[in-house]
Image 1 (cartoon, rainbow, N blue to C red):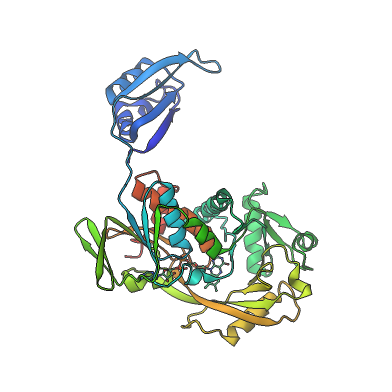
Image 2 (cartoon, rainbow, N blue to C red):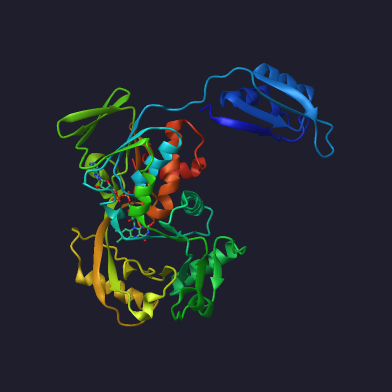
Length: 434
Ligand SMILES: Cc1cc2nc3c(=O)[nH]c(=O)nc-3n(C[C@H](O)[C@H](O)[C@H](O)COP(=O)(O)OP(=O)(O)OC[C@H]3O[C@@H](n4cnc5c(N)ncnc54)[C@H](O)[C@@H]3O)c2cc1C
């Protein structure tokens, strides 16, 4: 990797902390630099200047700041050009995972061929009218806890940066509806009391914010909301660097030394980098351990007066969305059944869960069933295996986890620093179940 743009060297006093100013360390810093990398440091000690000279940096002594008379700043003397993979990348699957990845690659200047087996984008699990965007956080310092928090912060900033109406930052209320949610919410509140990510709200405030008569207390995630997946994906694919091929089912993937061949009908296409974002179809084209498929159904209810004014998604055991196209989404069942026909049993399950939020009769208009890909440990599968990139298993939280996952894959391809630490990257790796 030689894509670090600037280093600030702040290793305390060189005489007290020589290990942080050693020649060995400067040589590894040098390896991370490209031709335009700069550095600065508050120290101008002789040892530091010598090690900078010997490892390949030029330096100038300039006026210091605060009580320091001098500081050093400078550049690398000679270095190769910034690493950038200019070769086209193939992305398989144009659901939310594939579209956000294509956009992220294109933003880094990389051209993308995006293959979709259906005749339209977002035809798999991402075909819902909306996806509620809020995290299932943990108060524990585990890879899961860190990933869920960081992916959420990354996602809300990502959607905000798009400046599109397909992102609705309405806030999301999570009601405290049983002993388990009570325990989770109180440990989250103990862990983080600054109110920046979530804050406690009483039922009367929840009623005022939501436009419904809410009987339970809960947490409000003010920066959360929901996305309109199809609209957002259409928006993301506008880049001239993205070539979308619909009705193009990848039948087979083979490796030939450094190159990967994709077969569509009788034609073969060759790429250096390929990323599989095929959702619940991933295991049909790739051998991957630790995946299961879970059916889910959302129920569409009529937007009667009693619910039409809901301003934000409200979640308890299930959830209800604000009005969209004269309906509200009530979700979602979770089962091992197959097929995507609507099930009466799953409508009843969703409506029973809705009673925790609003206990009134509703008119079912329709619904939509789909399949989530879910990993054994409920973390997404994101990374590289056998020369192929994989970005799948976004379970029930794809709108939260796909933006950071796209950045992970795109930074690996572009040779840039990843957006997460090693522990979290390992917990997402496609190798972890092998
Ligand atoms: C009922 C239900 C409710 C949900 N609610 C929410 C929610 O509120 N919030 C949230 O964040 N998430 C929610 N989810 C989860 C979310 O919908 C999924 O995790 C997400 O859509 C998966 O996106 P994806 O891009 O990985 O897969 P998909 O959207 O399934 O996309 C995969 C694409 O790959 C294509 N494809 C497959 N094989 C090939 C091939 N061989 N060649 C070419 N193309 C191929 C498919 O046609 C498809 O378009 C819900 C899921 C369900 C089922």
